Length: 65
Image (cartoon, rainbow, N blue to C red; front, side):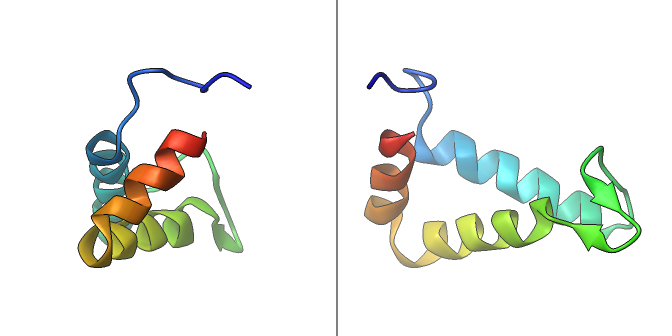
């Protein structure tokens, strides 16, 4: 199986997660938002937590994509 994006790395994923989390915290919605909430927010928080606690695990996760 080939990687989804060859040059994707943990830092890039964490940067996107940061944008998602901060935009939602500021009250901005995205295309994934519904009246019940947004599935992107828990994903972003999990990525940011992983980046803060175990950067190597984040890199392994991203490499598996």
